[in-house]
Picture 1: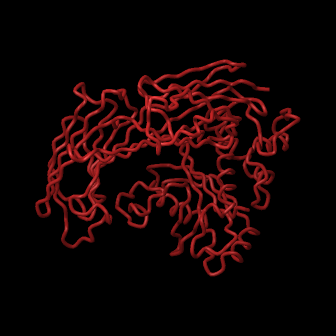
Picture 2: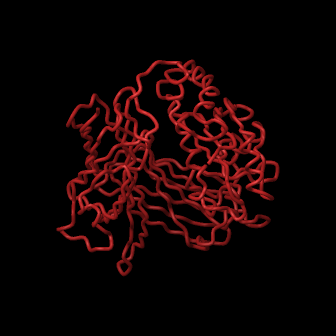
Picture 3: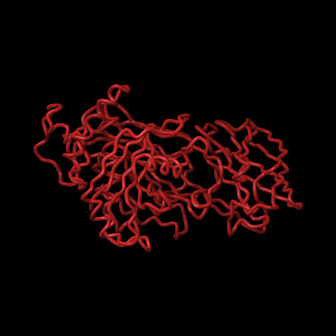
Length: 469
């Protein structure tokens, strides 16, 4: 359970390198252990320059990186975590933890105390969770009270001394760097007398609760009376609580809108202290009837310091939020497409972003395109064989939009990338990305003080802070 190296990199688009290493720390003793554990598959930690170039390439942050790279961009290599493998000097450095926040890339390489071939499951590598915890702690320290670049540089200059306290010899002791700052007498803060072992620090500052609801809809729409359309809705409620006190008790209540479908298959975070039994027994396997539990869904919990997913759920909504049809006709190297989309009346016509991705697999790059859109604008990524229909923040008053076009592909002399085993011939899909809103609850909280936020077509959220010692 140790780290081999840690980096902080400022992402600087438009510069020759694309970024600058602001801080790096290597642990030679951990590196020797990695050489023993990994054996023939051992890959040394590179210098800052090669590591910077390889990381920006893997994260698709280089300005001139526009070509499709199968090892990175193919559908078989979709990354659902913040764990990457970097190609450095012809070798693959894995695992590398990396994420981008506030134009700063946080990266670390954890120690894997076993052979790397075949790659072990991430859950068996304890250093991954420790590395991620440390990077999140560094981010919180840099930006908790940062007001300008001067404050940021000041905090960056304190990192070497703080990591000696928080992560000596690569072993994480305390992810809350504020505790290390206090022990080094940079500031004087009275520490609470009773600190839970699982909570590494406390928050000081303005009380704030941030809530984000994300729903993914997978839909198969056939447009035929003899074949029923199918769809699945999976939602996540993410939460970040900045509250003073050792053990603040918070209750978040989700109330369905009018005629809203009940939430089912609910899975909660371990910090939730209790739940109504009806919430846990509601399952999508059972037939939905009038007696199904429809809320309110109350989640009492003691929040951790970091962001976390409060719960996951499914919902059997009566119709998808956006209805559509996609027609394709192939004629040699040419392809004629027609896409029609209609926003359902129950969905609020106000987005932060709304766009449709139309990929074309196994055909080669796009060489020519003629198109007509009734609304929005179209972007063409020729080498990636991708059309991106940027709809914007609103549908027109008719709630219906259409796209038609004719595409030509370069087939001869090309290896027909991107490749996909499923999307062959006329088998294709349209992927819709749209974002409605996040919810941030702010204020001075006291016992039983309630803050409520409501958005049409989305759950109603109530947050109560019942105890802040």
